[in-house]
Length: 436
Length: 143
Image (cartoon, rainbow over all chains, first blue to last red):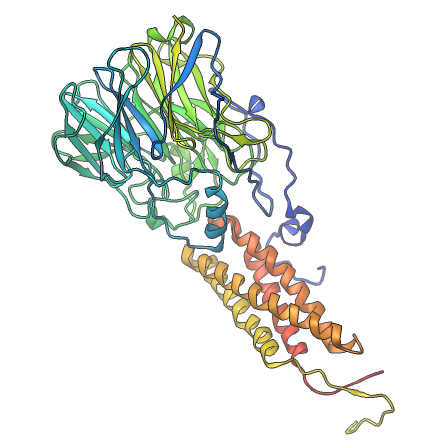
């Protein structure tokens, strides 16, 4: 090698270090992951092959997820078709959005191989493209009615309700249904409010929430790649939260640089918009933290140029030092690769200990040798901001030998005192209630 | 120098037609990958990187099958020395480095650079030499 002319600084290990073929990195469990407002971030790393550890799906059988003392959990609906997000209507009925979207072409051999491997950890059921309504008419905690509220939707995900309108974020369009209390079936096809960016849809889930006055909608639009590997052109109007006027459908970017904002909600006291966001992969087991953050109007949160403030990502070319400098830090790290997909603020009816804070549904990692996530956590709040360490709320979705019975997605607090959890691996909706 | 007078047997080991196609195929595939990498390196246009990834996969497929045929003919040969052995070993190194290159190209966006470009240069040169030697059908004198 000495005879080679030095052309550029070369990382010799990268091309002759076949010893690195399997990056033997000692991943830590999630207890050691940097969580909270000011996580300590390690240096980026990436071996020749990325770490992967795929869930091994098994049925629940007679088992159930584990809940804290003083709570109980029941499955209120099973055999759904990929439930993602849920919505509790004013009369207590629950709507479940079911579906699977995305039509990203496989551009590289890697996409073919990784796509096959990742599919092993997901349900084999076809997405329902529908909304299912669940009703517990007598209030005994059994949801005896399960009926299709609307069908032939296009990978519905985000749900919101305000002023007699039910809003549904399909993967390519924001639509609304007129809703009257007690209705169990949509009165007709939905009305279109706005088209949403849908080219490729690498991250297809369109998160949705509505302002308290019902006039403004917020839609989360994920990036079209992990880190621009589908080209910069594919990222037009991606990785941002749109603010949409409910009456006219006019939109503007509300905040940008949010790689994949998978759940949005308004804080009940402060009225501020909050989101959980899934960050980029392939920088090592402890990078980059997924996060919970208030979403500030006009702010740029870094993707793709940097992460957690000013940590520049060298994989993006051409680089943009000006954008890196402008990036703001998110509020609260949830830990890397946990795949936060659900967010709901608590209510006093959840009991004193869990009265003030946010529940976060973590779908669970696939690219980390020590799996993390696969649970619902509770982040305590004080004065409208996270205060303290997160605590596990619902666990037992994955056991120590990798057998995975469920994967939490959307979480919704029912103001009557219950947490509704959509599980898209076992196609179940769970309900956690304080024991009376 | 015009003619060899020897008591040893004169060995001929021309590769078969299929073997020749597979061997020769690695050259444009790995050269194409190199050209695509060079284009990505200069333009940041991701499609060139996608092309390089598939061309490397194609080079590995052709090279891998050629390696199998080389092993088969080496096993059948009475003497496992000379150009067939050299060609086989060179092709083996080409293939292993090519596989590393495929993994490097599986990194997202610019993470594949510059390692991917450097590996593509080495692999393309090795593929040319391996094919050049393996397809030499001139008689070789056993020592």
